[in-house]
Every structure is written in C-alpha cells, then in structure tokens.
Figure 1 (cartoon, rainbow, N blue to C red):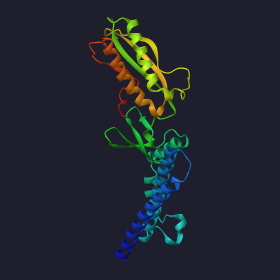
Figure 2 (cartoon, helix red, strand yellow; figure 1 turned 120 degrees about the vertical axis):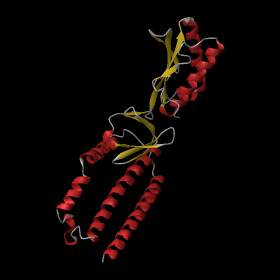
Figure 3 (cartoon, rainbow, N blue to C red; figure 1 turned 45 degrees about the horizontal axis):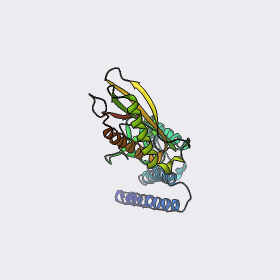
Figure 4 (cartoon, rainbow, N blue to C red; figure 1 turned 120 degrees about the horizontal axis):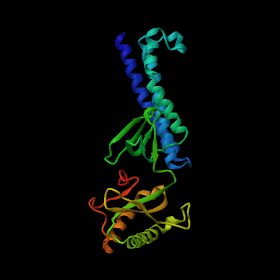
Length: 280
C-alpha cells in the first residue's frame, strides 16, 4: 500500500513538472505575438510563470497529502483533517512570506521595475533585472552572478532604465590651472559630445541644448582642487555610453591642452553613479 502511494506521489510530481514546462512554453509563445513593449512582455511572463509555479506546487502538495490520507478526500474543500495541517499552513503563511508577496504585488502593480531594467536595490544590490516573482526579484550583476532579493526587504529602488536621465560628470582640477582655460576645454568636450550624439538631441526634454558646462560647482577645502561639472539630459538607453564617452573626451582634451587633473588624488573623475557606471 505504501509503495503504491509513493508511486502515485512520484507521478504527481512528474506531471507537475511537465505542466510547468508546458505553461512556460505557452506563455513565451503567446507573448511573442503580442504588441506590448518587449520588457513589459518579459515582466508579465516572469510574473505569470512565478504564479503558476506556486499554484501547481500547492495543488501537488494537496494531492500528495491526500494520497497519504493527511487531507480528507471526502471533504476536499476544507483541505484539512486536523490540527497538523493547520500548523503547516500557519508555518507556510509566515509573516515574512506574506510581506514578500504583498511588497512584490505593489512593485508589480506600480510598475517600479521591469525585466531588463538596470537597478540598484537598497543601495546594495545592483544589476539587470532577470526575473520578477511574487516573492523575490532576481538580478544579474556585472560578474554575471545571479542575486535573488526577497521582495519584503526592498525599501528603495534606483532605476536607471526609466525614460530619461541626467548625465552629470565632475572633474577636479588643480587651482594652478587657469579656470577660463579649463572651462574652454570643457566647452570643447561638450561640442565633441554634441556632435557624437547629435541623433539623440531631439529626444531630449530640452531640445535646444545638449551637453553644456554647468560651471565650477565646488572649491575643495581638503585637497587643492576646484570641481567643474558638465551635464546633459539623455534617454536612459544611452546613459552609460554617454557617461563613458564624456569621461574619455575630458581626458583626451585635457591632455591636448596640457591641463592636469587635480593632485594628490591623481585622476579623479566622479559622477553620481561612479560605482556602477562601468556596468554597461
């Protein structure tokens, strides 16, 4: 009798696995013919696959429990025959799991992130969103490590893939350099950048301007340098390219004009995203 029940349980597990594969295959093919944004399709597919997993897992668990007479087959609607099942349900429906699910629901409902977005979670976890589930969100970082973050602990999300972003590049230059000469060099950098990214200028909110010198934004008290800044509003999909190119052109133009970047910190070009700008 026990062997028979065990075999039936194994069959249930196999059928559940096959069903999951079929659902995943069907969802991917259905979204191929839809007209949604590609990242939105990937997000919906990820969420629906996650929901399908939990539904099939729950049904499989109930059927296996029925095989071993833990769940009353004659009163299937109640799902429970005794206090033991109540304890199992209470353990599964713990506070942390409920928090993960509720937080995940609001993240999805408010469209805070989509599959393919580059994000930073809680100023700690950063990478491209690879999968969004009702309990957790998975990222792929620069080292191609997969990071899975429970939705319940997500307190803040920085999304670098939402429409537009402002490229802000700071460069620290020694006080010994003529500030007018430095500004002229940065103006040259802006001209080069505006030529390189001319096709994207009309996509800006500010259509009449591209890269521009913002000016001297700080006079450092500790080190012997002044901080200069250039900015530009860009579409998020070219943000990292524009940021890297701007820094490269600063080094090239400064070298050509014999302008030395501030010491003793050596080359110290910073941006608000200096810790992640090499990701893309």
